[in-house]
Image 1 (tube, rainbow, N blue to C red):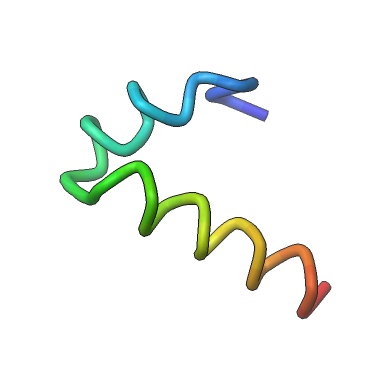
Image 2: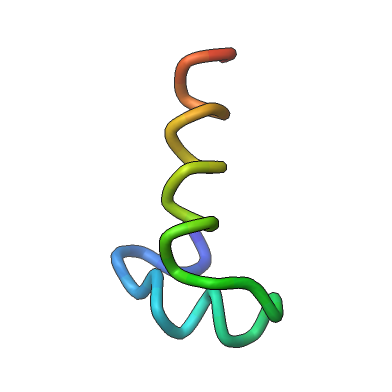
Length: 32
């Protein structure tokens, strides 16, 4: 995992909020 627990940095790099990123990660984990 590229970001390995660094959601805030990941979200900043991706241009989305940390909360949105967390939700997307949860959805991804549920769907896979």
